[in-house]
Image (cartoon, rainbow, N blue to C red; front, side, top):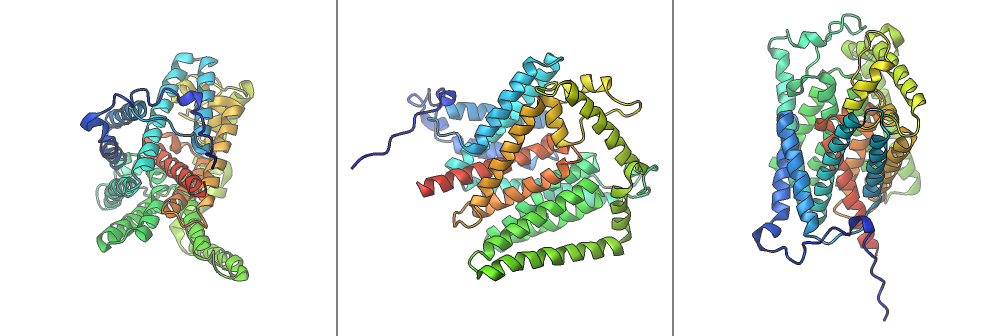
Length: 440
């Protein structure tokens, strides 16, 4: 009987496990608990904790993963983690060749800190899968508090809300809530990936109190997102909830006869599209907001974004291969050289354009590779019976919603949104690894 060869440790990870022989005592045996508590505090506090508090929790997560990795032998690098390392490598090169290297270095440090959170999430979920439910519960708790605070703003002083009513927009006079995040678009971006996770939690959790909690998070969160009147947020919510419902239907009907397995999802999509058309034509606030999407430059928000996109395209044409370096600090120094008068911006207002601006064509290709690896990981769970199937589908739907919103906004790069995205990637990465072990 021949034994399969043991794969060698990738040279990039050979530093891991250096302290494995000396690691002992209560600290080394409680890494999972410490990591879980830190991550639960981080995910629950995303919309509620100050930026300083979030930075401290992010730093704690990265240091904890570093210590855990030193005490644990390295495993294999999966497809998702591999593409993230490629993006990190591109960011390092872009920082080195940046016209403003010190500002780009700040962005590189921020990216590295987020990757530390991803690495800790992946390690925790791989070693202790039960923490997925606990992290989701913490995430939903923060979301529910934020959504309630946002809805309550409708019944309080509307003076602050009025500053988000653009008199130059076709939707002038619309009251937009923003909750504790101080920005309706940011509130919407924060809620988009959480809604499909809440729906899957509702299906996955067993006790009635848990299901009521998930249902309240889903319904109240969807209401708050709608009341934010963020057009990108609405499209992202449609993308996220539509994707998770379609994936769940495909999974539920996988054993049906071929004809109905193919026909039933199409009928559901047609019915949903018809209901959406009726809603847009019959509900006046919804109709007005949707009309602003096709108003072109006549809508001030559209006009602003178009001007920023044109400036970003000029930046890309000047530095197409490695960009200006990662982070908003580098963008804030370079963008004024290309901006049109009176159109200040903090980002490119489009995730694909932002990737090109920061790291050039290699950065965009790496981002597309990461997206493809995520889709493969989620799709692999569509017909499987793994305990990771539903979490993976929720994560894939959340990423779909973020991608839809990311076409015309860069809210994703804010930590309140981005860290939920890292949680989704960690979920997909672990689900892929679990499926590979089951097939071995």
